[in-house]
Image (cartoon, rainbow, N blue to C red; front, top):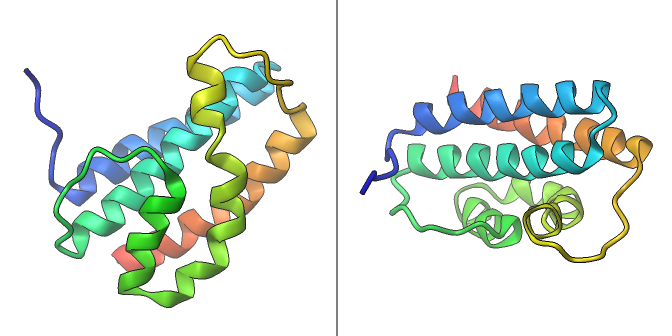
Length: 127
């Protein structure tokens, strides 16, 4: 069985790819897949940040729980709680055949813009 990397840079590299996928999916009008990759990107950025701080890896997918752990290292990340709450459900809604209304393209674009602020903050911390 494959084991997840514990090296923070591996997580950020994968997160970058997920963020690129969001842009491509939005350009093609596939908001369903765009939302999934947006959640995945933020999850991986948060995990990468945490791993860089010596965090003991946990298989957590909940962005708020991950943010709770990030805030223990830097309380300034609390400002990103709203975007984590907005993006968090995208993981479940895309993976399973529930009948949730899919966010429209403009909503996903707004989420992406807000998420990029979190990404910039993490990238700044990693340099």
